[in-house]
Structure formats: structure tokens, C-alpha cells
Length: 197
Image (cartoon, rainbow, N blue to C red; front, side):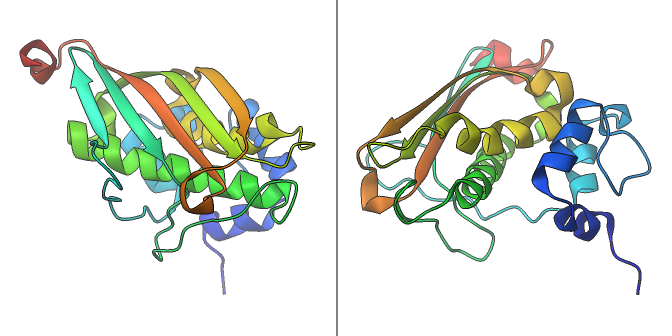
């Protein structure tokens, strides 16, 4: 039985497909990702399942739009099956699991962006990403972990997904979630809703 492109991708070590991504293509796909015309088509090519919209866990909203910018609240590693990644990096969570959790948090951000704008195709640029890693005091690979979120954004938005970033460790996060990621997103010029915001 032939495997889908997404299934083949999952069988390739992360370091291999990340190198291919930087070169402009992903293993198992016939077309380079940067030749696909829109973020929505790139996301479809990845073949990933997006989680449901996660409700705010306090007195805040998931996103606030001000003019041409959308400010995303912190997003947690919330997976399509409803599970959440808990634990502390360097103690009971390893780096690769943390990387996968950061990918999950980025996918959750995509859900919020789509809910806010109606489509990912209105994103002009991912401006900035911040990643907070629930980490043991001697853990030092925060950047590698948050690369999981950054890689998703580049896979989906191409060059427009490359962003400024902060990745830091913290002593704890709510409910012992392993990480949290937020972002600032620029909306494309010409979007009528931006002029009304």
C-alpha cells in the first residue's frame, strides 16, 4: 500500500527534512513547498490535522486585531485528539518531544489566525514569535524546542513565515504545560477589514 506524502514525511528524521525545508523542498513531496501558491495550499500539502480552537483559559481572548496587526495570545501544545503536552523540559520531557509540542502549539496558532482572518491566505508576514519553555534550571536547548513552532510557520507561509523570535526558559507554566507560544502577525495590504479595525 502506498504511503501518503505526510506519512512518508513522518518516517524521515527531523534533521533530514528540516535541512530539505531550508533548501526549499520537503521529502515525499513532488513540488517544492515554496512553489505552492498559498499558505492554505501549503498547509493542505503537509497533510496535518489541525486541532479545534482552544478556548481561553482566563480573562482574555485568543487574538486581538489592531489595524494591520494581529496579536496572538499564548498558545499551548493542543493536539487534534484533544490532548495537551505537559511536563518540564530537561526533567520529564526530552528535546524531541518538546519540539513536537512546539509544532502542536504553532498548529493551534494557525487555527486562531484562520478564525480571526477567515483564511491563512491573508497573512502578509509572521512578524515575531515568543516561546516560553517550562524547563529545569540546567536545561539549555530552548531554541531547539521552539524551532518546532518556527518550522511550522515557515512550512506554511514560506519566506513570509520567517520571523524575529524570543525563546526562553521559565520555572513553571500554568497546569504544568511544557511550553507556550505567541506571535504577532501582519495582515496583507489591501484587506478591507484592516482599514475598519
